[in-house]
Length: 524
Image (spheres, rainbow, N blue to C red):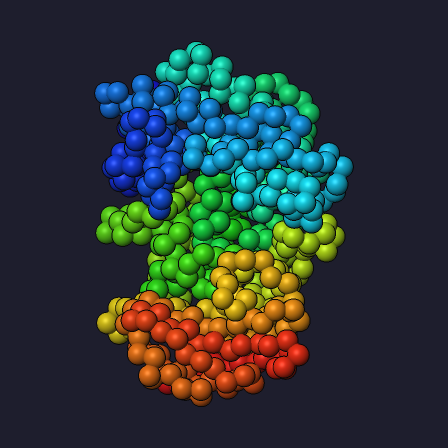
């Protein structure tokens, strides 16, 4: 079976499998029967190990099926099976991760967002003691394996996988119905798929009905503006497109396939609107982002490689998301024909505008979805992005960004961030609102501050060699880009190393104004 699947693949799909497996083979720990974590080699990776099993079954070289069975049994060993707990059915991220503590209250009665509102006082702390999303990730992986390779797996392992999925889907549905830990867009898509797929597999009519109703709600929300709550996010768009591929290939009813097709088509339309083929990147702003570079923490480049083909292998370069590539190779791509030119050929100067409703994970239901507007000015060698309307507390929200490329081909990035003094930007912080806008060659931002602790509002510039001495309070001379800076803010301090500069403005509660504004204008 594996060879017949592989033989039906295009050359680019086979390349993805071989490339990813070469990478994951190097991380496999024979003694632990799992993949090592690429960023922490003394730890092992549960989700990645499941993806590795997909690649082993698909590759089907001597010993691969046997190794896949061993790995899958180990992944199942990581599942948390206490039915009374908020984390029921999810998986420990690593065997080195301590089991989460027991909850102190009946969490299902506490209402939406309870895992955040009550936190360590009465519940196991979400993300720090357990990852609720591993239910959905592992369940999607198991669905792919059972759909394509069940006949070559030991019967005992299949039975263990089925038992595991009963717990995973049960826990996932409890999570969705209580909203104790809200689901971002990519997790919603996975949740709907696994409730549908395993509902069909187990003949569970309640699960099937739940999946149908959730798919209708998701579709209606998407079609309002043709956008997702995790807007313009290369990391999560990669997951979204992968899972929509699961809907397309493995859904058991035409209605779910139709809804998935609408969302997949609309998502590619949105991607094309903000994509620049010269910079090979999506413009900001980003509702959620880790990196400014699309190829650093995302599968997006993999999909574009499948579209563009030979000569674009660099778009599928190994990164922390590459473990997904065997699944991506299985489901392929479905990009509308009229969208494809925008992903391959520069479309000229333009202003891109899109509305979306965000998800504020830590706010109450009814108060956690705000109407936002994303704008981007896109030229051949520079992109400016600005977001308005957001009240998100998540530091992954990037409201103001600039991407550009020099004549020599070096890419640079600028993003506006915030952090408590001495802290890190990737945290939840209340009392900071950004209102950003763009027009031709200009990015403007208003910052509103109401925090108890001192906060740094700062522009981070990165990508290549930088000389901080060429930045003044009113003019930033950067490689390939000159900016005039008009700021209504405390005097900036400039910190740098060879490839990163921070221009920092400090807000001191009660001492400095609680509003800052910045206008960055490109000087031709």
